Length: 262
Image 1 (tube, one colour):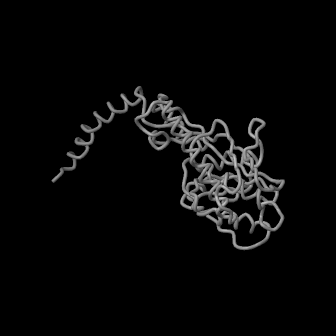
Image 2: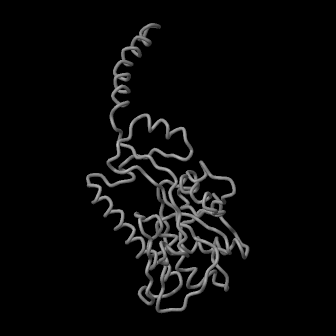
Image 3: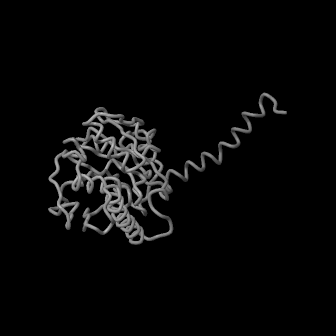
């Protein structure tokens, strides 16, 4: 049984190693990555003078509006992140503290990590093309689709690459643009069967989207809560789980119908 004075004594004794830990942490690098809103890119437009989406072997349609994929910018895998940096970022809405291993695969050099991210992007592009063609009832390989986006790694642009291909080939299916002339942004991985997967840094990506003029943001449904946490004014969230669901929601913005919400 504790006496009235035994508990404070125990806490005081335990405080010594805690203070020592904070003393060490103040100078030692921590296993975190600091992230902030990054650039966005219109997949219906050009990247450094080259179309992001080029299609040969079938007629394409001119498009209006924008489909902007979003990114975050993170400190490098070998960057020293101190406790002061972490505390400062915790109190800012335009910064996020993320476990380093959640951003970069562990155990690799910077060049190996960069290659891993670029490989993920290449795989994502292949899946995006297959998903778009499957949605449109075309056999993969029936048309030649080339995707180009420099200096971006990872798989999180997959949904928007697929939407871009759909818009260039079929629009909203009724002669109009899939965007309805809006600036639509978002994020999400994609599989060849059209399933949309979660990504990281969604609350930062919504900020980048609104900064660059988006009024609609497509978010993987599983990440609605995070997307709402720092949602900028004037940006409407639409949760998605499949490519078909994303297309249906965009069509419903112009043609009426049910539009899901977070």
